[in-house]
Length: 453
Ligand code: ADP
Image (cartoon, rainbow, N blue to C red; front, top):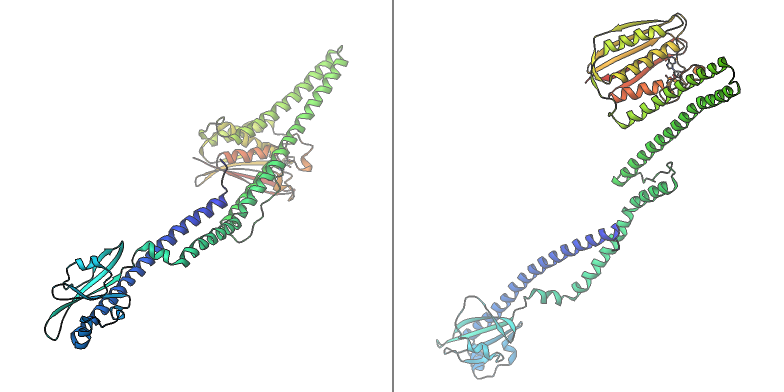
């Protein structure tokens, strides 16, 4: 079945509702009109009958002329009311003689009109008594056609019958046009999304009208989503390219070493050197692959990293002890640790602390110090690692948390540029955040805050 467009659907619904509203209003108006008409009609009947009654009562000659048939017919037709005169016995003696069935109905005084049907049409008749000068009772019967059939009244107003469909057609046309205009941003959104899907160009954006209505808000929200997707996609591409680049170097070294080994297969010493070099590159690759896997798993969720209540003081102290063993350049690692426990993943928190202290040692100066602190602040555990090393330049500072970012000055070091990105990722995984204060040539202070529970 062919799908009806939203534009057409809305217009049809709108027209249907309008039709119902118009019909209800029309019926109400007609009912009011009808009841007023009926009142007027009965008033006319009352007046016309009364006027005949008074004339007969007061005007002797008039009554005489009537009885002798000298009165013209127009005397018995007053304002659409037809009048009949009956004597005391109920004989029809003057007036209109068009309704023999009506003469069958016994004439007697009524205080309100009576509705009756004659020849398939509805009428009201009203009988009134009058007394002549001689004291004879006579009756006047007035009759008028009842025009209160609603459908009849409606169809009699030809203008309504023509105007109504024209108005509804105009409403449908107008509704269709306005709906089309209102839905234009939705069409634009669909078109842009389609262009992005087919062309893969995430830099495209939906045009906004700037009037701040709901559709404008929707377009803005979708544009913001595209911004984020675009950025994430770029970051992902960059990450993959950097990761491939970092893996290519050890692979090239391994292949070159293998060729060298084949060429010098007769020398056990040379072969040993080759094996040692291959092993070194293997460790490098294994470390990198482990890190890449960790990023992916953290991105995916908690499945591989269960949390447990952990004594952070003991954890940080243990890392400091290990770091002292590898510390070179005569750098002293000092601790100021408050007792803090937190619900964390032990392996991750160890990695985070190792990375920060390792950086401080790596970028520390000869005879320098690395101060490690642990404290609590509200619901947060706060870890600080401070050194008096080379510091970070203002232009490097905003980028140090990016994956694979290394400042020019640190390119000669063994780092991969993934350490701080991992620190940030781990802090985020624990509902926390990272901060850094650093001055080039003076030193750096890293602060990690994580939620304890
Ligand atoms: P890397 O493996 O290169 O150390 P990181 O992600 O750990 O990668 O750090 C990113 C960059 O931040 C480093 O290349 C270095 O320039 C800078 N950096 C990190 N820690 C320190 C520090 N304690 N002192 C000075 N610079 C630092």
